[in-house]
Image 1 (spheres, rainbow, N blue to C red):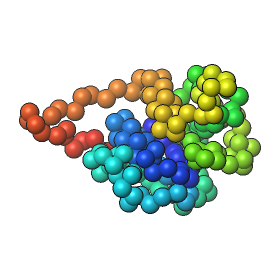
Image 2: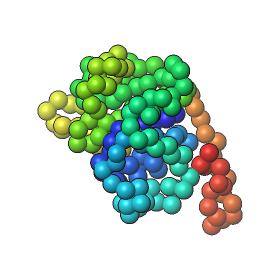
Image 3: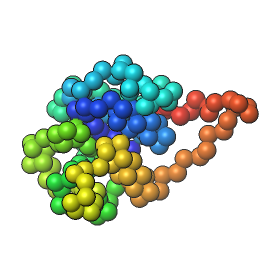
Length: 170
């Protein structure tokens, strides 16, 4: 699976998403200018020592990301403005789960160009404005993995106090 963050603003959200991507062996794509440096301590702290195992792709702008996609790539955009619940999505292996900036969401041109590919994560109306980005990514990613029945074998520990084998990153 692929997780795409469009112009993220908050470093610890990106760090948490990166950790989730490592745990699921998913690729993290960061698109457009970031609201922080990837060297920021908050990113590293949130990603902890897992960051080095992250499969990370950076794209300067949406058009660069779009050009990198395989033809007929399965794209799923997540927005609180979407009409369809994500439970109605049929995810495929290698899906791209696309999330907007924490403060601005996804730009209008994406809503227009990919209208049929937008989904929302249901929430009780009037309770909160939105879910935290890293929470939303986790919900959508694990549903996509459930639907595609992707299972990961447990990584054996190397010794009683050893760390997991280095097969996590790729």
